[in-house]
Amino acid sequence: MCKRCWTFWAISLGFALGGFFDGILLHQILQWHHLLSLVPGISTIRLQVLWDGYFHALMYVIAAVSLAGLWYSRGSLTERWGSQTVGALFVGFGIWHIVDSVLSHWALGIHRIKLDSPNPLMWDLIWFVAFGLAPLLLGTFLVRRKTRPPAVRPAVMTLVPLGLITLASGVWSLQPPPDQPDFTTVVFRPGMGPEGAARAMAATDARLVWTDPDMSVVVLSVDPDSRWLLYRYGALLVSGAGAPAGCFNWSRAEV
Image 1 (cartoon, rainbow, N blue to C red):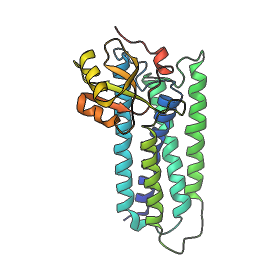
Image 2: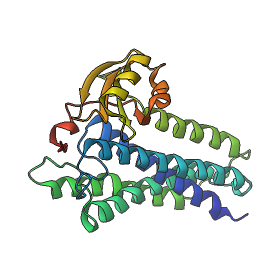
Image 3: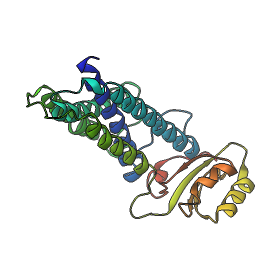
Image 4: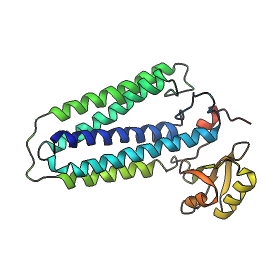
């Protein structure tokens, strides 16, 4: 096993954590944009929320594959494990934001950091420097820094907290903002209609908070323990974050 394998998979995990950070902070807490906010033909709330869900699912896959890669390359972790691992995570975190800025913001134009800003380029550049270049440079420094080798091989000691951090990031992506602890966004499958949505809400004792004109996307107040039952009644996506006052304000729902 090459020593670079561990660093590669740690960078990959940092990349996934960067995606979680972006989705949780910008899509859910601050609600500044959706993944495909500026893509023509994807203007309905239902599609915007659904693609945000696909994005988080992809980050889950990358994180899971990265953790598996770290486990299988644990034999190469014999020296500089602390600074190398932390540095690699920062490198991956920075790479995510650099790729997102260059590809999503400027090359493809599928969204910007702060859509309602009079100067969106300023916010793009702030994010690019603060969360892209800065972590990348810090991580590169930590990876290359020479430190004493540890007295014991710390593979399991490292993988356990990394796994917990990744799991916590995934769970957090399902949580609502602090001021809205029981709101849940639900995307129903096409053709459900108001009657199907009403049946799902009745089955889970949910209270309607917000809906689009067709009730294909709804925001509910529902017991967290009953939230996942909505999948049995036609839900395609159930998210713990639902906040119609934020990104729903600037989103354009088609009637």
